[in-house]
Image 1 (cartoon, rainbow, N blue to C red):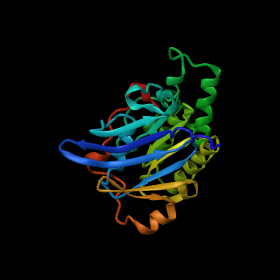
Image 2 (tube, rainbow, N blue to C red; image 1 turned 90 degrees about the horizontal axis):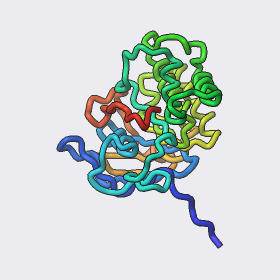
Image 3 (cartoon, rainbow, N blue to C red; image 1 turned 30 degrees about the vertical axis):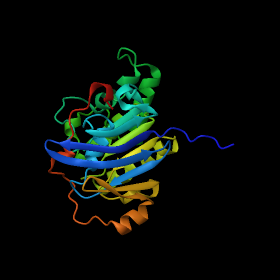
Length: 259
């Protein structure tokens, strides 16, 4: 007797969404299963960032259905299971905080009344070590380079030990050394069974980790399959790392998703 397939971690069906009067998603289907690493690819304005922001509730769907961990989105409350890394160009900046304080913020959803236990401090330290920033823990985030700041944002998400990690252009504008560090950290996380959804400009050092690529064009899925085929059939020349349109303008992260 065949065993039933487990519920997808993300199940987005027929999703439509608009930014202002502009339709951005036009019937997107996106399914991500436990342990998968899925890359969302597409040209600027194709709907990649809007798609991931709809998954975490920052952009409301105007049509279609969304379930997370088998629970309809309207009833989903367990945000501690999800880590989110926004685009560095739109993440909050200028905050007078140390590296450790920022990373610790990603752990708060798993604490009781914000009180850190030994396990919480260990998770924060592990996240800092994963991204090579343990030696900068006491430094102000305002003293960091762009690549280092991105490492801190990723460590903040990893500190929460999420089952699902969603990252929007994690390599954009990051130097090669930081890209390699981040790829290594992600490899470690995937090895622990974390499910990952990435918006990417290009696969780069993450390519060996990608199980599936979903290519969007004008708010529609035009490819869902192996990454090499996706890149070969739907080459995406002339990307900019900075997205000038509303599609990429990330809003502040809700309190329940401070990761």
